[in-house]
Image (cartoon, rainbow, N blue to C red; front, side, top):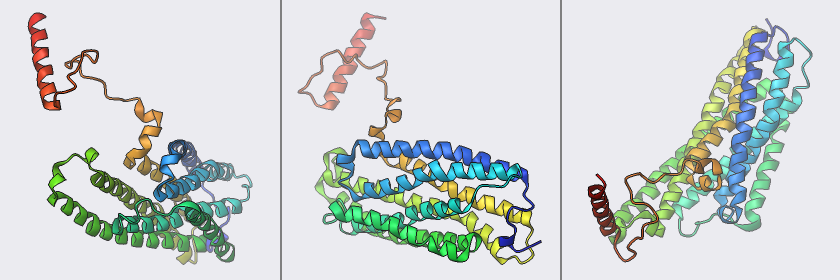
Amino acid sequence: MADASACGNFNVIPGISYFTAAASTVLAISTTLSHILILHAIIKDRKKKFKLFFYKLLLNISIADLLCGVFNDPYSVVFHTQEGLLQTPIDIRVFHVSLYLLGSVPLFTMVALALDRILALMKTSKYRNGLQGKTSWSVLLAIWLLSTLQILAYFKLGFIPYLIVFAAVNIAIAVIAMLITYLIYRKYLGRNVSRGKSTPDANTSTSDNPSRRRQEREKRATRTFLISTVVIVLSYLPTCFATGYMNSCTNCNCAVVHSLRDIAIVSILAGPLFRAINFLVCLKSLRPSLGVFQLAKRQPDSSQISSDQPKSPGLPSSRTAKCNEEMQDVQNRLNP
């Protein structure tokens, strides 16, 4: 029995260390590949995407999460494998610094993203594309500098004492940002939709109505943000409970401390993967730039007329469909 910070590498359970190393291996592969896809989709269409501040913030989050998959996850694999083999592990402080740095960048970016969503919903016409030019890139640079400065608290408090502060702050900021954005989302976007229904062109398709297209875009972007805040809460909630025990116990069981420590680390490392899944699933604008999403293109139905048959350019779509049905009926009669 000892204080949690005094457990060090004593009383390690090899099975738990091997499980953490295996989980980190899966996270390293899946997180890296998924964020490479996201970065490829954004950079490939950067002339269009970078006109919106939203995608610059998305780029910032994806870069931090990719670095987490490239560095933090493999570092966790090596450390926990050596720990399971009862060898002297590599210096864990480098991993701690990187964990806090790459965990803070998405958090502060989410704060900027919350402000971006709020302004986009409240002032749709004036804040259509968000911050532009050097101002937008300066905000992203400030996020990295702020994330670097908060690491100083780790050197002052230590890993376990600061981890509960870090997790609690992440959860609090995510919940506050989520609630404020959701309330404004319901108020302003709901009002815009109700106004759109009352206008004469309310029955016009979304593709023919720029205003409706913009509303749909804001809906998807805001929902993606709200889900991302939920991911942050779920990622740091187990960490908060685990570090709560580790910081409150006086005669701690070191085996329990190591188990809770690994649960906290795996839950934090899983956050970047869940964010990538959220972005790829919710943001349809990323899919055209990704060939993997174009493999399942819709094939023409066998009952339809071959594409090499001439169409009637002057007929409306309903009359064209009727003509196609009549032509198909004639073909069925000629070829029973």
